Structures are given as C-alpha cells and as structure tokens.
Image (cartoon, rainbow, N blue to C red; front, side, top):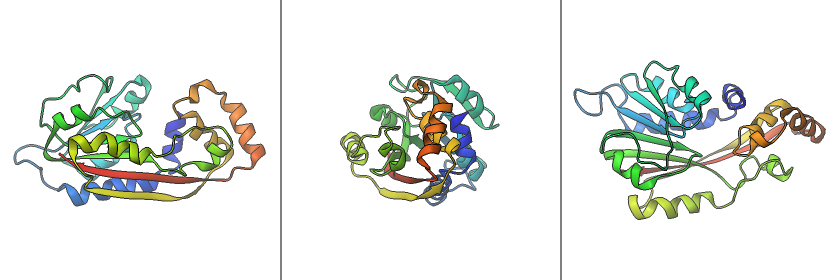
Length: 224
C-alpha cells in the first residue's frame, strides 16, 4: 500500500515518462515487433506492476508478464487485462522460453543476468533502473534509508560481461514535494521498511520538516 501511494502521488512520474519514451523510440508500439504476434514485456521485480501497466498502455498490442515474490503486489499487477502475474524467485530460471521477450524491465530488483540474456529475443531490450548516489538523500541523511553508493558501476560490472557496453545511459533527476506521510511511505516501501513503525516514521519526519525529496535515478539500456 505504501508503494501504491507513492506511485499514485507521482513521486516517480518522471521515470514513467522516460520508460515510455524509451519504449516508443526503441520498439514500434503501433504494430507487432514480430509479424503475427504482439510484443512481450517482462517486468522482473514488478511489485504492483505500476511501470509495466504504463508501458502496456503505451503499447496497445503488447502483453506483459509481472514477476515478483509479493503476492499482494502481484494481485495489483494482475489488474491490467494484458498482464500475467506470477509469484517467482528471480534467482531461479525464469518461467519463459528462450528468445521470447521484446523488452525486459528491472527497477531496483535483483538481476539474474544469464537468464535475462536467455529470454531476450535477439535485438530485444533490457532496461535496468538503479538509484543514483543522491537518490532520496534527505531520508538517507536522516538515517532512515540505506542505499549503497556506486550502484551504476556495480550494474555495469554485472551486465557488461554478458551484454557488452550499455547502449544508453540516461539520468532521471529532480526534487519532488512530499508531506511527512508520503516521506514515511518512501521509507516503508524500501527493503527494510517492514521493520519500522509507519506512525513513528511519519512523526519523526514531521519533526525534521522534510518537505521534498531528491529523485536521482540511472536508466540503462542493453540490447540482447
């Protein structure tokens, strides 16, 4: 629910815009990528399916598959009529045939690089989003969120041996206004959020007068 509130509030709207732009420029959205069949979009670590749904709305002939371990998130992901939502451990072999995916999306999720390479069609796209070094710095400086630096360098070290150099590196950045409740949601939706009390977080952020957060994201694209 915290993730849904953050996404509905548009905190990461600029990322959605960038992903749809990449889809429109890199894959034809008004006709099938392969004659006779619609494109297949795979979201690894899909959560509620927020970004996948927006990509599907921009590509009316495409179908989507959402993979995640969160059943509650997948119930939301399955609401889109062209989405198949599957509970799946991304470290296991992915439940798709080889050379079947036109666009693979990974937003802040673990990366099974060898499986990504296997399921992507030749010429297909892997789009990976990682937090930049100053992403949500206001919450990190308050000791409420831990994000390791050099995420982009780690990503390149992981992907390059299999995919070669990234075809595109783009940055999505800006300052987004938030209230204490929304800032608490940003902490709560993180990997350690379930260890915290939401009301206590909101009160602490209110006391610190956190009124805006920095969004700093790296969007990298590899060609299969």
